[in-house]
Length: 27
Image 1 (cartoon, rainbow, N blue to C red):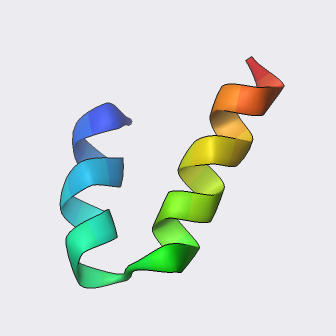
Image 2 (image 1 turned 30 degrees about the vertical axis):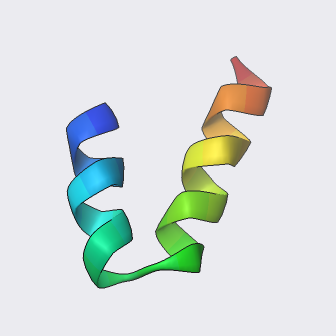
């Protein structure tokens, strides 16, 4: 998930980053 968030963050942008931080908050 970390790799997907990093690579996806470059392409998608804020949307991927938002989901990534949401997962961190959930955990």
